[in-house]
Length: 189
Image (cartoon, rainbow, N blue to C red; front, top):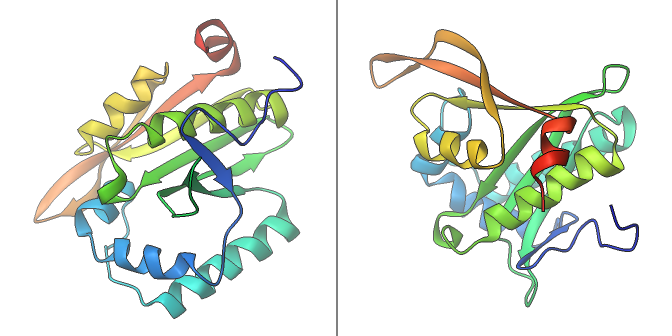
């Protein structure tokens, strides 16, 4: 690791703080996109107003300050301030050096390289700065694109929680994919 390399700036994207005055509007628009929201987790997708998003983000900031179990970032391109996604390292168990990772890129910003660049930054932050030993990504089995994406970074399927998600009248598995620091160290750029 080069100590002078920025932790928060990649080739295309930056990890930034939450902008409470402008980000809720964009996130509220994304909450209307059930296709995005249903790929992330098991909770029912629902549209949220900017005011609701702002309250959620305020809680995230408070939890980060008080609990120290999560690092949450907004993702922006290098050349402007628009919000293109978010990423977080969460459920950090410091004694075990473990945590979970989540990344989302807005529908109109996908396939531009922001997700891959931000994911690399989050992995470096987790392993080199936070000194975690393992990371887990939790995805529904129907999120094939997300599963293929994290496998590209060396994650492998470790746990299959069978039929824990009910969507559209069908039961789906929840997959836990993991990556160890030693696996990342061998393969990262």
